[in-house]
Image (tube, rainbow, N blue to C red; front, side, top):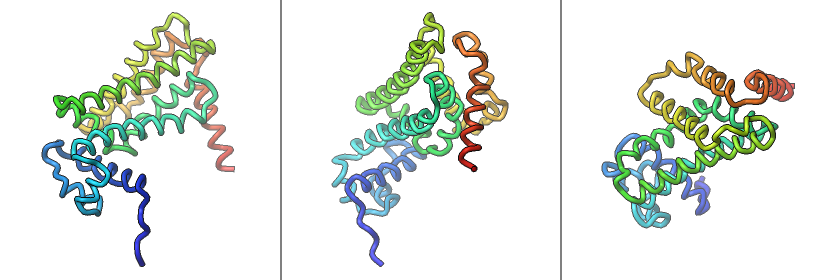
Length: 219
């Protein structure tokens, strides 16, 4: 039985997902287009139908990493009623999101070694600035809704949140899992929120909402 022909967009996504796995395991310079084609189950000319050069594919994969990450953030945040709870939920789920999309998170670190290439450096910069806008935007919205002190610097808080995500990614790639196992994220959130939150026990509130949602789903 003949396999269903993929649409142009689906083929492009398939190529990027396959490339992410290879680029995440090796350097940009070491991966060949022949290896990329084999991993994707296509011929080399198919790659060039979608990407003019290997660098075009690499940059597209880096941008795809951002899209995949924020898509997961949005799906999770959509289930929560307020900006602060959305931010907490996303931070708490970071480890799971990271594991489910490991090739892309590994690539975030791998790509730093190729940041001497202007287009790679620009793609990484755009990725991290997008993550920063995501979290600073949630914090600013939480301030507007009276969940967070007005005096809090939303941009600095967002950079701090991102620094912890990068630390977790680095530790995960090195096989250092103690941070997650020791409840590091909840402890971090509890300490940080004690200074900025105007809501009493937001972690407990989030837990009740999640438990209620799970109960409703199971019924």
